[in-house]
Figure 1 (cartoon, helix red, strand yellow):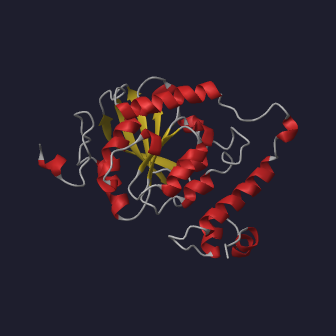
Figure 2: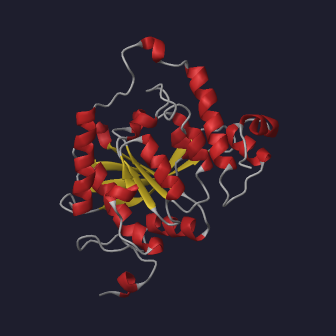
Figure 3: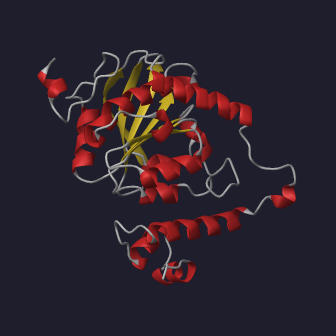
Length: 273
């Protein structure tokens, strides 16, 4: 066993494979965790190809990183999801240093749905920055997510062919607000589709397909307006942030996240007596 594998902050081996402890991606992970910050990663495929290993790439990273700070193996049941609701609940309850993997995250695009969780999800991601949580989202292509969520991400991994990907750092120009990407390094991983936790993710995907991808009923009268959905979502986020005892956020701090005044926060939330 090498010194790198024995080192407490080195990536954990996954079926005999180990992420290079010296690679920039792992160093960024350590930097974020050691500075009490989140890390957000988006995984896509070149030319929107399917079956090239987006899920296995995410799983390889999750299984490598999750045990380092949590002292437990990564579990698909506890930290994997295909829906927005479970992902948000996992984020709020996860230990510091946990890795969450959300599959088919194109549903987070505010252009694609009317459900309250879908609209302005960027507000959630904006607030998700100080819990030492890694979020790995897989998408078909770069066009499957709106610009706001891309700007909030830290890393983009683009699968070029099965088992090989390019890793880019995502940034936003301070002067014009435009997003840019900076090449970091190449990333290779083996086929880990046979791992028990990876198989659990696959089974959940099959179950979701069977349930159907849409939750909107046939009766259009039951569908709320986008404006009302956004209003209710902001209220829900404000309430959750105000109840977040660990960080004791003020009304002004919550208002800054939601682009609202502190008075709006107090008027639209309540504190348990």
